[in-house]
Image (cartoon, rainbow over all chains, first blue to last red):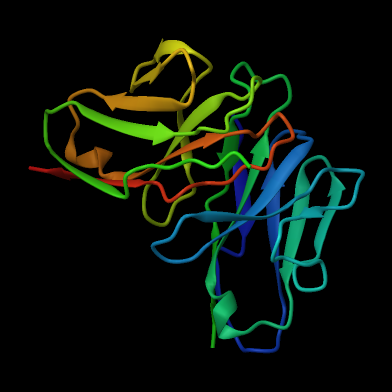
Length: 117
Length: 110
């Protein structure tokens, strides 16, 4: 398994500002994902962030709005730019461990609860 | 697109067995089927994974028919602490697009 931490755990921000969310893993991973989950809803994949390559964004999400960095195998950041109240959500990162006995398994961070006023 | 379909909600009394079925008609040959549990204000947590037939671990069983177009998560003797949302997911490692479906909100009643 993996221990994943996210910072901040929650934040309240003003519209038009940006917030950078950090995701730290206690082991080296290649596959890392960023999700958004609105209250009472399912998870929506924002992008896949693999080390050494540009992030791959899902339909409806663009790099200018959600820039992602992946400087090494244990860390990634997601920035929510020029925020509006519609960006209020929980943002989660997840990882897939290499050589995992149970393939395809994702381990999730605790999430960052963002409220935009 | 590895789309999944599940019932939106289910209720069960404590001590009963609960079966949650997921449809995944577009599952690819190399796809595994993975189930997650999510409590409020937490990230999803892995429950069980399978490829075909039956898999059992200490918390659940997973039944997968031969055509693999569906799967059933079985929770034996549920307790109040099993109240959560349960998601099935396919298609992660095969390059297919994958996404979490609506999930099934299970409420265990005393």
